[in-house]
Length: 501
Ligand SMILES: Nc1ncnc2c1ncn2[C@@H]1O[C@H](COP(=O)(O)OP(=O)(O)OP(=O)(O)O)[C@@H](O)[C@H]1O
Ligand SMILES: [Mg+2]
Image 1 (tube, protein in one colour):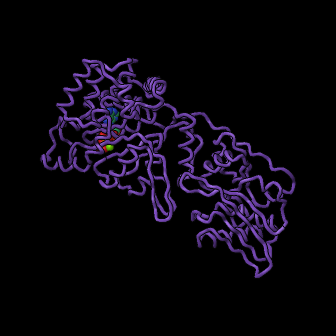
Image 2 (cartoon, rainbow, N blue to C red):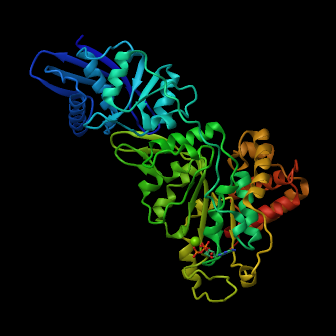
Image 3 (spheres, rainbow, N blue to C red):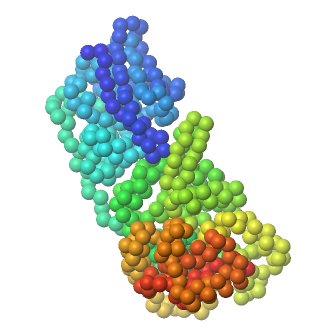
């Protein structure tokens, strides 16, 4: 045998395409050459494979070895192909049996001593391998994550020497993953910590119930950041399908996926100094950005006007379509980016416009310039806009806070309300299309005339009009009403704060 073939998978964005690793031994000048990987990756992989085989007590063939990775267009990170290449070399030189290898897909990076090191994107590879009906041999550290792909057959590898011995001994054992621990919301702050602010809490509940985007405007220290951080604890648990999407994205990200987060909507709060690439994703081999890491969860942009305007403009595309395309010279990747936007800002540069203290000294021109940092089209895409005034001193300093609702209580209502929406239209109200709005969000006749008046007064755009209807739909769902009435329209219109001023 002088030719061996091992299957593996590449990673490009969320895609995990099949890669065939062919290893050929021929007489000639001894050496190992890899084709199908960029130069630097080849050099590194070759050195690791050679050292690992040697330290594991096997013989590195004294032949001309050619490794072909097909298709040739592969990502730069070649580490994941170390293990399939090493197994291919051992199989082609007759040092391990080949029968089992042909039915497997293999992934793993090698250390110089032959230890198998974890890779990124194990979950997406496991999903594809399972679809293809093949078992996946992968690093032990990746098993818990890969096991989230239901039906995946997994074998764990810890060390090249142990793996080679196991292949000699007979059929490989299936890895038994530790079961995913139940949903735990510990570590997420509770709404009961926030004193007063009943309007803002109400808006937070509406946002959670219908998946609406939210902008809070208020003076420093009014608790905007505090409120936003508590949204995550109000959201309904993710479905298995949504959780899998979240896990797949995290799996290819820098930080990786923690199986304990299964079922919990992600919460991302990038700092306003974040670059465009950090926010939307990019890099020579495209990595997901914050908008993708917030997929099926919350993206919180604190101090909204401080963000680079060009960076904010990029958000318009995913806010509408729920996905983002990252194009680079060499390759292009589509990432999901269906997030709930929550933002906070001060009303003016000094922050105190409209505050009871009367401290504000900004000129109208300064205020306009400050607000203009956020473009109209972006504001237009925010369903709920509201002012968060400072809570009065008495409420804050009262020795005993009056009993208020906890996150768990509000979450109970949110879950019930979301279930109504899913039963009716299969998605949260915030994601209704224009046709679906016509179908599901019809106000009664008095509410309709109220809405018409309000539209004239606020000069609402068409998009703003549809947003009011969607929010009104959520308000009706919260009280279990079939049609939208006057109270719902009246309240929904109140959340168009910036259209008014
Ligand atoms: N309603 C409240 N209940 C309890 N504590 C509050 C409340 N409002 C403000 N605080 C206190 O004030 C601190 C500052 O609040 P927070 O950071 O949320 O303000 P902010 O509105 O985001 O201000 P800035 O505009 O400066 O970012 C909180 O950490 C908390 O200690
Ligand atoms: Mg803040």
